[in-house]
Image (cartoon, rainbow, N blue to C red; front, side):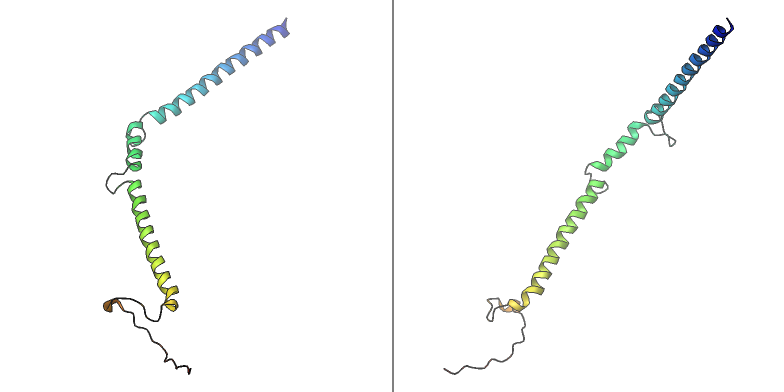
Length: 120
């Protein structure tokens, strides 16, 4: 009979331990949910925090992340075009025809070596 009593006490203690453990786990989960959905240390609710994130995602005239990315993209396109122009000028200088058709104001200054005439 004593072994049955010991087993009953052990089963009761185990059951109480499982129940207390379940309550602690539920409390921790509820506390985490409350932290996420409730008010943070600064006094902001989840709605306030999401409004701040949403403010950064949509263009609004210059202060959002989307506006900054668009601004950087425009600068990259402009810089890329300028680099392509400089590259074309640098690589194309030796390929300028002898008599280019350009307006007098835009005529480039080229140093040409004198050519000798070939006899017929």
